[in-house]
Image 1 (cartoon, rainbow, N blue to C red):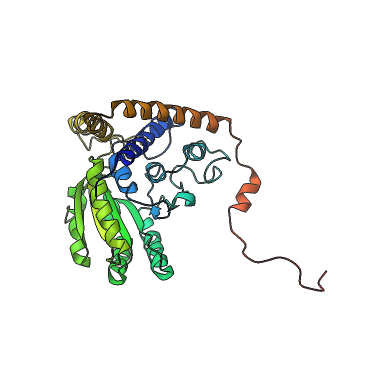
Image 2 (tube, one colour):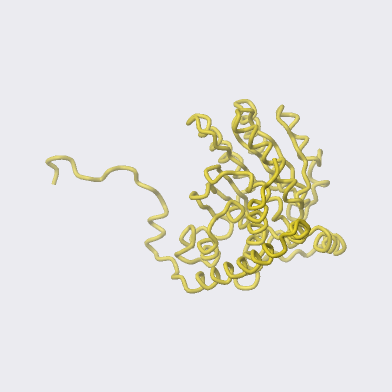
Length: 326
């Protein structure tokens, strides 16, 4: 269940695209909840999926479509609020979606993805395909009622859903230890009779391995799995949020930036395998991709008023006149 050479390089490229995309956001258009520090959890999970597998994301949403392989230019244009954006500039940072690569929903509502991902799993079962649905969520979302309701339904009906918790340790400023009676989130799986797995969320290939196992179980009709990836966000809950209290120490943040940066860790792994030239090529390619995406977004037109009407609803009714009707 290991990655081949091309897959490892693609994984590194996706992780780096997430990082550089968000660094560009900070530099040019500071908005949103950043995934910096969590790239291995996202990339490792998504590389285990097929293009036609479904993903639901969270309000920390930039990384998920990039991790799934979405085009960068429309995502960047969306952040800039432009008409060429993936949602015509009307969705914004917390509502990115790209059905072409299986990203069906991202929501600013904490816990909002659980019912959608579970419904996608039910759709897969009813249609008889071998797709899977992967639901990204944070540690804070597990205290929402939608978590228990959705996981229980998936467990009872053996739906092909992977519930993937990016446990970065904090719900805004509240630590997991202060908000969870059972801080080991993976152990909640016991109450639903499904597997619960803990993985180092800074180790991209370890994340891939446990996700791939869950994917294979789901495809074969074995039902859902709960994965808890222990990860860390380097920045604040939102890069526009001024936190008046010190809820985590500078030493803690420094340790993760210095010792547990997933980009650096995976780069070192690839270099140790003799892939230095390939890594440097990817770094140059990603830098160019991000630069082109920023230029594309800046030069793109703003949304038009008519876009609001078009995006409000889809009319499936054939409005052709009846025979003999004027």
